[in-house]
Amino acid sequence: MLWLPLVVGLGIVLTVFQAHLREEQPAWAVLVAFSFVAVLFLGLIPQFSNLFGAITALAREAQVSSLYLNPVLKTIGVAYVTSFGVQISREAGEEVISGMIELSGKVVILLIALPLLQAILATLFGILGF
Image (cartoon, rainbow, N blue to C red; front, side):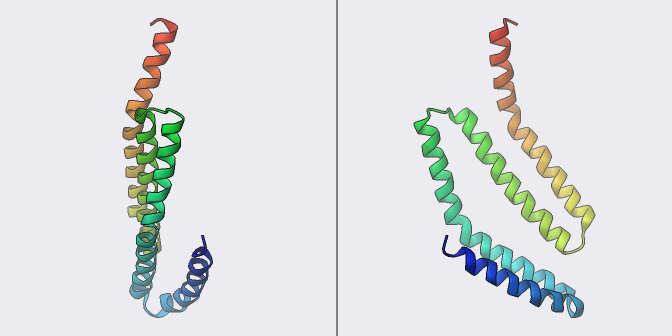
C-alpha cells in the first residue's frame, strides 16, 4: 500500500510529460504509456497473487465450491486483461480495435459464466420440479 503514492506521483509526472511528447512524437508517447503500464502491471502480479490467495482462502472457509469461485476469478482476470488492451488501443487512437477487444472480452466472460448459469438453472429447475 505504501507504493500507491509513488505510482500516482509517477503517473502524474508521466502524464505531464506525455502531453508534451504527444505533440512532437506521438509514437514515442504511446510507447512510454505502454511501458509504464507494463512495468506497473508486472509489479502488481505479486499483489494479484496475494489477493487471489486470500479470496481462495475465504471461499474455502465459507465452503464455497470451486464450481462457483473459478468462474468469478477467471472473469476478474479477463476483465483486467481486456481493460488493459482497450486502454492501450484507445491511447493509440484506435477506437475500432479497442471496441473489438472490448466485445471479445465480453464474449469470453459470457462463455466463462455459462457453466455457472447452467448449474444455477439446473438447481432452480430441480427445486421447481421440472
